[in-house]
Length: 426
Ligand code: UD1
Image: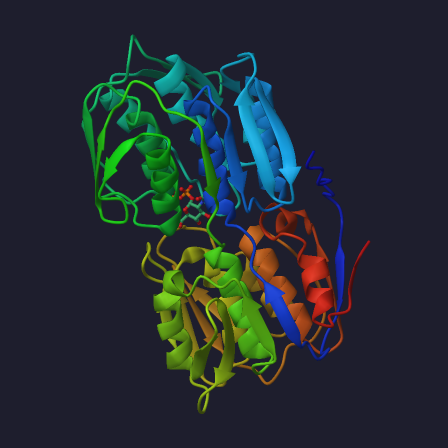
C-alpha cells in the first residue's frame, strides 16, 4: 500500500551552486490522477490506473476512497486497482478535505451514482479564497438539492441527475471535471459551455469514454455528454505531469542544457515554450519524449500573464519567477487566476531577489545571483520555486514546511540527487 509519510515540520537543506547534470524523469500528472481516481466511484467494476505518482495528495485521495468503501490495491509500481467493496459512507470528512481541496472531486460522482453526498466545504486556502460556488450551481441546475450547513456541502438527488446546459461564468478546471463526471450518468444530454480545456480534463474524458461514457468536444470549450445507465471497468494510464515537466524545464534552462528531461509532454507546453524562446532559450527535442533547454542567444527579460490552458499556467508562475530573478533587466508577471499567489515573493527576496508587487503584477529586476538563506515553502508550487532558487543560490538554503513539495512532486529529493544535487531533510 502507498505509504507516504506526512512530515509537516520537515525542512530541506540545499547546498547551492552544485553542478547539476544528467537526466530527470517526469512522473504521472497529479491533476490527472486525482479526478481519474474520483471517477472510479462511477462503476462497480474494477478500475486499474497506471502511471499514478506517489504523492501526498494521491495518498489523501486513496484514504478518501477507502473511507467511502473502496478496496485499493497497489499491484505494481504506480499501478493501482480500485473496486467498491461495500459502501461505507457517502461523506468526504473535514479531516481529508482540509488536507486537499481536490477532495471536492468526489461530489459529482457520489451524487450521480448514489444520489447523496456530504463533502466538507474546502474553505480558504493559502493561494486565495478559491470558492466552489460554480460546482454547486451546476449541480443545482442538474436537479440536485444542495445545502451548505455546519461546514458541509450536503447534496441530494431524487432519482437521477438531469442533463442540462451548464454555462460556467468563468473557466474552472475541477468544476468542469466534477460536472463531467456527474453528467456521464445523468438522464439526458448535458452541454458544458465555457469548459476548461486543460489536458487533464481531456485525460478524464478519455478514461470515462473507455468506461462507456458518451462524450464529445473535450479539449474545446463546449463539451457534450449523453448520459448512460452505467459504466464499466477500465485500465487507464495517467498522462505525464506538464507542471512537473515545466519545473524541470526551468532547471534545465538554469543549468545550461546539462539537464535532459525525460517523459516530457511536449505538446502540452507549447505556450510555455514560446515564453522560454522570448527569454532566449530553445527547447531542443531529443528523440520521442526528451528535451533539453539551451541558451539560444542573449537572455532577455519578459512580461508574462497567467491564464487558463493553453496559455501560461498559474501552476508554473512561481518557478518561472525564480528563473527571471537572475535574468538581467526588468521582467513582470501578472497573476490572473488566483488573487493571492505571490507568497513566494518575500521568500525569494530573502534570497536576494529584487521584486516589487503592485496589485496582481510582480515586477522583477534581475540580479547577478541569489544567495542562500532560510525560507518557507508557502504552497505547493512556491516550494518548487524555493527548491530551484536554493539550487542556483550561492551558499546553503534551508526550506521550512517542505511537506507542500511532497503533495505534488514525486521523489523529488532522489530525482535531484541523481543529477548531483546535495540536499538533505531534517
Ligand atoms: C485546478 C488545479 C490547480 C490549478 C488551477 C488553475 C487540480 C486538482 N487543481 O484547481 O493546480 O492551479 O486548476 O489552473 O486540477 N473559482 C470560483 N468558483 C468556483 C471554482 C473556481 O470562483 O466554484 C475561481 C477560483 O477561485 C480561481 C479560478 O476560478 O480564481 C480558477 O479556479 P479552478 O480552475 O477552479 O481551480 P481548481 O480547479 O481548484
